[in-house]
Amino acid sequence: MAQARPAAGFTLIELVIALAIVAITTSIAASSYRRYLQRGHRAEAVHALLVAAAEQEKFHLANGHYGDRLDASAGEDPPGLPIASRTPGGRYLLSVPMATAAGYRVVATATDISGDTGCSSYWIDESGRRTATDLGGSDSTARCWP
Image 1 (cartoon, helix red, strand yellow):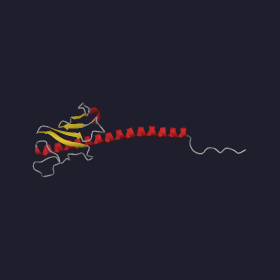
Image 2 (cartoon, rainbow, N blue to C red; image 1 turned 180 degrees about the horizontal axis):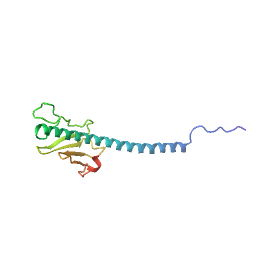
Image 3 (cartoon, rainbow, N blue to C red; image 1 turned 60 degrees about the vertical axis):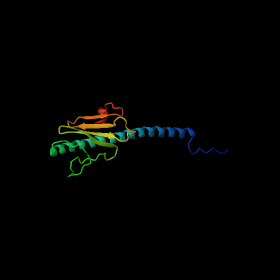
Image 4 (spheres, rainbow, N blue to C red; image 1 turned 120 degrees about the vertical axis):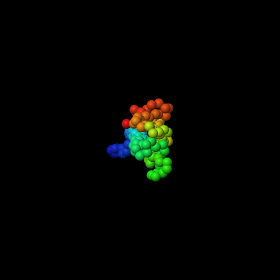
């Protein structure tokens, strides 16, 4: 009598189980990666605002008032801040809506809010006060600023 050969390959059940494990692992990894990207984008905005605040203080020491415009070159008249109006990644626009001899406010606004609606606008002022709002205008400072 001929002996039956052991079956080579996988059964359908084994294949379905393997695919389910891969799908679960992929969904966990994708959500973790999205959160990682959000933190990186938020750090980009925070870094740009802290650099702008430092430049504002230098400008105030040199000129007696805070600067009200960005993208300025050295020696321009009227003088301005040598800070780009876009963050290096291009995800935030910087602006100076208020600048006087006594104070300033620098704002970073998200250009693409599709990925992160929780932190769409950040700002910092002359006292170092940091604020952030979500897309609906609610305060999200604790979540957005480190």
